[in-house]
Structures are given as C-alpha cells and as structure tokens.
Image (cartoon, rainbow, N blue to C red; front, side):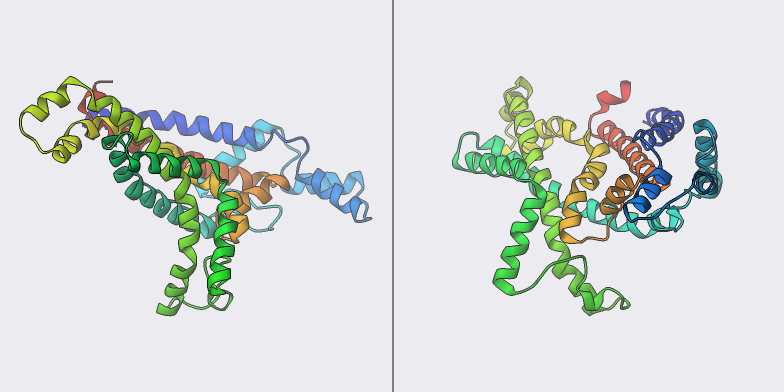
Length: 328
C-alpha cells in the first residue's frame, strides 16, 4: 500500500508542472490582452490612449515580454514567494483575492459533496434493490428532473418560493446587517438561514447523477455468482449488499472524487451570480471577460491543483476499498 501511495505521489510532481503550463496557456488563448480591453473601454467612453501610453501600461504589467519569460516569472513567483501577481481589474494582489474567496468556495463545495453522498448512496442502493418498484420509478423520475433542471433556474424558483411564503429574501451568505459584523451566535444563525439554499441547489444535480450510476453498477453486481454464494451462507440481505456488491459498485463513484470539487465550483458560477455568493465563481467569470490574466490564471491553477489532489485521494480510497487496484 505504501509503495502504491509513493508511486502516485511521485507522479504528481511533473503533473503539477504540466498543469501550470496548461493553465498559463489557457489564459492566453483569448485574442488581445487586458491592455487592449482597457484601451477599448476607454475609447467607448470617449477617451484616447496613445501608442506610447499603451506600451507603458504593457511594460508596467510585464505584458511586453515574450510568453516563455512571462510564464517563467509567473511560476517562479508562485513557487518561491506565493505571489500570483496583481489583478488588473481589482488592482490587488491575486493571492489576497484567492485567500478571501477560495476557503468559502471550498467549504461550500465540500459540504455540498458531503450532502450529495449522504443522500445519494442510500437512495441508489434502495433503487437497485427495489428494481422496477414504486420507489425505483420515483427515484428515477427525481434523478432525471435533477439532471434536466439547470441549477440557476432551480435557485430562482426556490428563492421565489421562500420569499413568497416567508418574506425572507436569500441573497448571499449573510443578510446585509450581518455582513461586516464580527462572528456571533446571531451571525451564525443568519448564515444557516441563507446557506441551505445554495447547498441544496449544488447537491441536487450531484445526487441525481450518483443515484443513476450507483443503481446501474449495483444491479450488475447483484446478479453475479459470488452474491448468490454469499446469500446461501445465511447473511442478511442488507449485510450481504454492504459487505460485497456495494464495495465493488462504489468504485466508479470513488474514481470521480478528483473532479467533483472543480465540477461543483464550475457549476456554482451561475448559481453564485444568481444568489450573490462571495465565492470564486463570479470572480473567475469577471476575470475571463476582462482578460485579467493573472487572476484568471491563479484561479485556474488552484482548481487544477484541487483536481490533482482530489484524484490522488481518490486513488488511495480506491486502493483501500479494492486491493486489486494496488497491483496497477
């Protein structure tokens, strides 16, 4: 097991370098630079910028250097100093913006993933065990609706329903009067009154997908010979399911842990705009539209690193759950 973990950990080093390179190249794909966007906005407002002024701005932000030099300076500052550069749009260090937004985003995403698994796994097992029953058809219908309804639309519907019934307008993680005050019991209570809706919206799609995957995988395992043999030994049905076929059927879900967190973050961009959440999604959207390359690159880099770390954890969980995987 230790050799398996060490092999996977060693793979991460060159993979991280490759991810940093891809992240930097991705933010360079849109035509033009932040300076071009800045100049165009000034012209739309009736202002003018000379070529000398434009060149001075490019030199100030380091955009006049070749791409390899820009990448070398960017990745060196990140690795050695933790400096992701300065945001053009916010005129602040990118690291400071990430420090504010990433913990909130990761916290909301992890809780949403936890809730997703807590609800989806029992429902998926029940749907497979009660195949073609009323419960199976009900969970199938709920899953299809969860996959079909966009998250932002569900958020709008739930916001309207809550406001119509209670007069409570959910917008952000805190009510306006609690956003700048120190932590207290009242502020924590206000957080609970607001955060349940984004958690519900972010969880529903994940629950729907996991139910379908787990149901299909478990149905394949329930018809195999080893299950019949285990059943003949006198094990109770639920003990048999959890001890044998469930451990095999859960493997496809464990393998998806690596991209679940970035998927939740990606899915919460529009939801966060609708619900006015102070997470990383809206910042990424604004950074890409404004061509704020260092901010966008920092966010893409963080999400990529989270994907790699999640995949590493997923590999370990798979190896613990199924010893056959350690051979690979």
